[in-house]
Image (cartoon, rainbow, N blue to C red):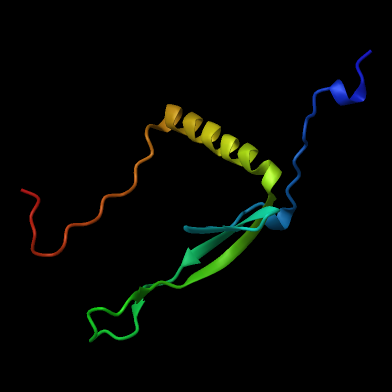
Length: 111
């Protein structure tokens, strides 16, 4: 007979109805302490230049955090491995993931 700690573990994930839809995020900020990594998922706001007449003024993009996830350092490699495995499966089905190309500035041509 197998010992309880030798049996395979099967997680039964249950998502509460209020979380089933998920949230949209197009920005990620990551920071850490000695004990955990924090992932702040956010949605970017329209860019703004505080001083348009100053060519050196920075463009500021506000980001509203929609979800904060704290991960123990000991789990980080499992998270990275799971993301990599799923990205590989995604690309096997749908093709290589590519970033969108930047649009050409006005007045230039692609020829």
